[in-house]
Amino acid sequence: MLRLGILVSGGGTNLQSIIDKIQNGYLAGCGIVTVVSSKTGVYALERAQKHNIPSAVISKKSFGSMEEYDSALIAHFKQYEVELVVLAGFLSMLGQAFVDTYRNRIINIHPSLIPSFCGKGYYGIIPHQKALEYGVKVTGATVHFVDLEYDSGPIILQKAVEVKPDDTPESLQLRVMQEAEWELLPKAIRLYKENRLILEGRKVRIE
Image (cartoon, rainbow, N blue to C red; front, side, top):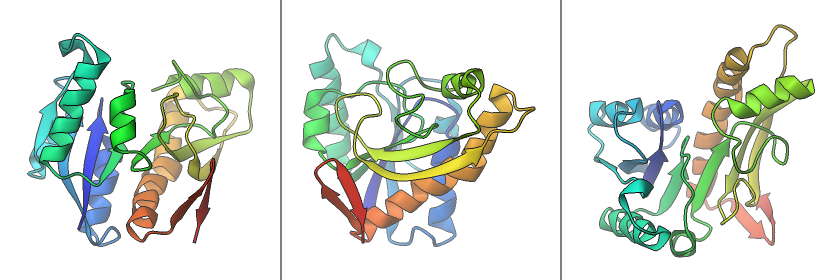
């Protein structure tokens, strides 16, 4: 079984998409062994509890340095023998030690077509607000490997979503989740499980 550790910061809709795909057999041979939230009181933790998945809150604010925070995350993930780290709406920055420990074993979902509307400060509703402000005709979502910079690791999958004339940031956000995010993140996990993701420098080849 591919042991997944999921990092969350909010409602956990992407977490739910993974849970659903495990349950319906799409992610056969995969299991979520722990869910870690960056803050208390988020609905993602209730989703984990509902499905009897061990969960924890490890907040960067609780530690005096990035190194201490990284050490706590690493210790937790090693305790659960996590093999693939999945950022599913996770808003905290990861440090050097964590990224090095799980090099090429951390993936993230971002709600835009990177390199558009990404980087520091582009999270939650903001990429969708910016897409509408710029008047783009398509936006979408991207799954990528994680490195030390925000949204800058090698791209694994992308899917475009049409921007409609009457869209609000909220309606666009929902459609990007429904049409792209909830499909791409489980697909990337499946490709990883099947050893079909081949890193060639900054590019990812899918076999």
